[in-house]
Length: 548
Image (cartoon, rainbow, N blue to C red; front, top):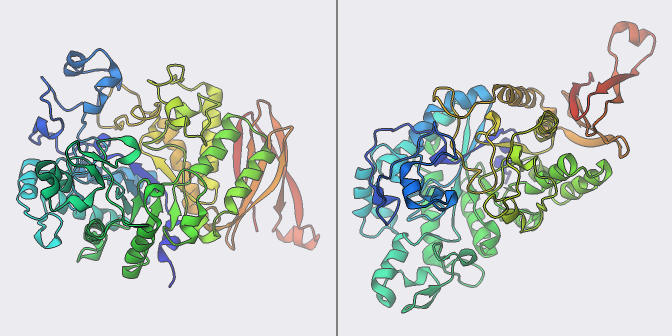
């Protein structure tokens, strides 16, 4: 059966949205503070999109003098209505696909500690208190026959419809390795211990002291129970029912276009294969993306997912443009990456530079030498773990380097993915500083929007959408120079032939590019080819359409 998801996904310009920090459409929603924190916080209030990230509210200062000790308690309350309001902005930018961080019921801002998977978080909707009542009234929440749609559920389906009407796809985050402690099954275990009917949902070693398996040692994230190389059936049945609700509702246009698998390398292979089969047997149009940080071709080749978030692409680019490895070394690493995946999958990979789990691109450029392929990179790129991590603004040279990197992102095989706010100049170290609130034209802010940068993103997106060769064309390195730090490659299909050249050095470089002449006069002279000389400024690049 043809995998239709791989056909449409290679055409996409992705945009990642962290809902709480994106846009608030319901500023008058009633707030129940205890929903977000078990402890009552004096004078707590939602944070304003308009204030600087470093500016602390009075309640934060009252709790602690340490900036980072209170950040996890901030809520900006971005919501579904806010995302829907942003559709014109996304269309104008040229976005054709959204990846949403978790949206299911959870008390945290990130929502990777979900309390259930079958309801959108009440505070992402327009009637949070009413939604909480509906959710609490469900006697057997694991049973789809007992589910009732909340206001937030209905608004999510409406958002998907609106996106589809505007030719924008959407994939949602699926967190299936673990839950939060507020998850309905775990809460029942806390109340009833061994007598809980949900005790098989988790691997609990000691009910008296409540010792259980949890993700990476985080007790706030208990892992779902395993059965050999799979999740236990009771858990898997629930997860599959939730997937069916969000991807396959009765109205096709209201269903999401795919799912991103959080912590995919922590999930049993048997479960991943079963999930892949479950989804694809219903529709091959749905895309399955895995969060994997290194080359992981077995997951794709064994039909456990369609594509992965292409972090190795980012590592190669970081090392070339920021750490200044030789072009020949960059080519070697790129060819290793390309040879690891089937071409049809490779062309749909999500090529990203930043995410909710890494520093933002503007800050990454300030910090050469971070070992991004090693697990230590996470701590080394967090400001509170590494005070020397540089978060200052970019110099003119560094802005040129950023442009070079973006040119590569939008002309390379794979589907480029923009982390919200990168296009307007948001910066920041790794989590939590990479999760700053979005900057909007219609919201006065203490921070300035980088309009020139946003214009550059628009032009790059426009070029990618214009030239089919940049989306589907063959790829070939055609020249490079280690001494001059020059790199040139070509994308080609039946319609277009696009040459992309980079000067990764601090001096001007002149390069030759073959062009094909098509005038009648040239044909008479039998003069078919000639050189075109291009002068590249320091740290610059060029995208040239060569006439076929």
